[in-house]
Image (cartoon, rainbow, N blue to C red; front, top):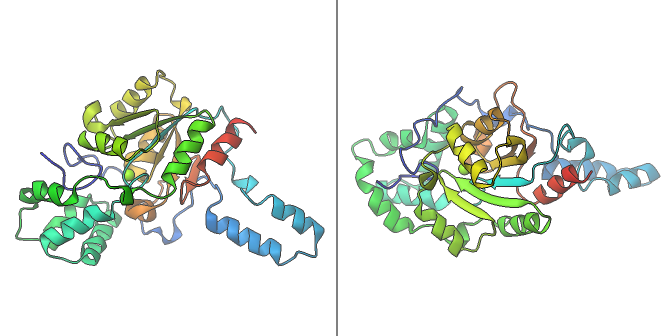
Length: 290
Ligand SMILES: [Mg+2]
């Protein structure tokens, strides 16, 4: 069986709605307090407003990364950086646009209903009865895959290549492991995404948020210590919550529909919370070499 969408290659991800329904993200906490681009810009603007003050000039020099936002040095930095695929490496806009075209609705309509489903704690499959109530969408899975055609270079977020290359040059082990059908492995390799290991849930035989997925990823890297690793993911339910519960370090990447809409449950604070991958190598190297 092929898959209707990303991240759910085998079973449609029956676990995807686990946990509390996410609230609207307007007042969503920003997680671990790492400075986002906006925060840095705001701080910079404040500092620029007082450039006559020498101290302000000195402060400005420190604003490349907000020192208050750095991870708490309460343990060793991870050496293994594991990346999710959908909305972390790959912009999935085409996935949904192709579905919209197949079902005869606009991409805007499909995206709006998808967002509503996410906010209500539903999985992406909840979209189909709304946008195509008289159609068995599963009959169109093969046609969707034919039209989608797999990952293309234009689907890869622009910050992926420099981030992963820099991490490897800094000595981190870079792994790509997401809920994907096995055929996506070859597509990512053909696109030249830099990594030391790459594996899909279908190849592992387990998918997030199953702890077996995370254990298998660690095992492939030759460790059983979860603090060796940081998982970089966009979804709270599939990525951040299960990884953190297992003792992994976590980096919540707030992009894509889930990254913007989901909320953190009480008591869960990712080690890093970012809006892009650009700062990740610097933050991890500063964590490792304070
Ligand atoms: Mg994802």
